[in-house]
Length: 114
Length: 114
Image (cartoon, rainbow over all chains, first blue to last red; front, side, top):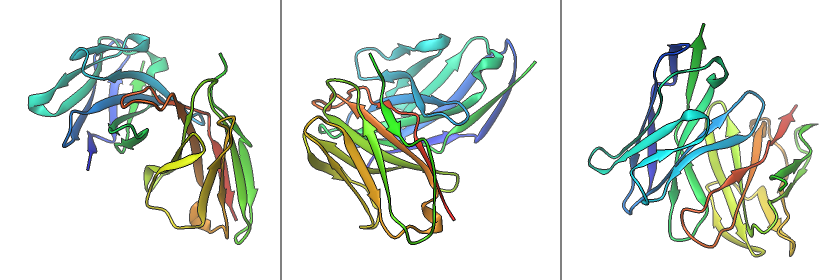
């Protein structure tokens, strides 16, 4: 069964600093991987997804993630943090075979200080 | 195009009662899935419906049920509510016809059981 591990429940950065949120996955089949963001009292918004087309995936709001099969990782990065990036971020893996089921990590709360 | 719409957004129920939550997927999407989000357990998959048939089910008791209508709209029901059912319930939709489809989430329904 697929699983996702997000290292660090909280990550703090200064405005303008690099954002790096870590995600490692476990999957017995080629995975489909997603990053979602959740702002307070809101649902989940898709940032980006990996579906094997390209290992470096660009998403919205300046975020990108790189799929590394050898490391089973899909870390999320952004070169320069903005205050508006403060939110909770979830990495997820899709259980394939046509089912639309996501297995989520425990989430990482990003704190951005001025 | 309208996103995933969930109603009601907030509700308070008493232990032992039942509750029905509604979800309207994005137009053209045939798959609807439900997730429960709590601080302790994180995001957990409840079930997925595709063309009115339950295609996948998570590890929840039988008190949790759902259905999908011919227009793809979906409802989930929780009977005999327990305090532990207090959570954010998220509905998601996708085309549902292939692995790796983008899964879009609604804003969620906040359920408080007292």
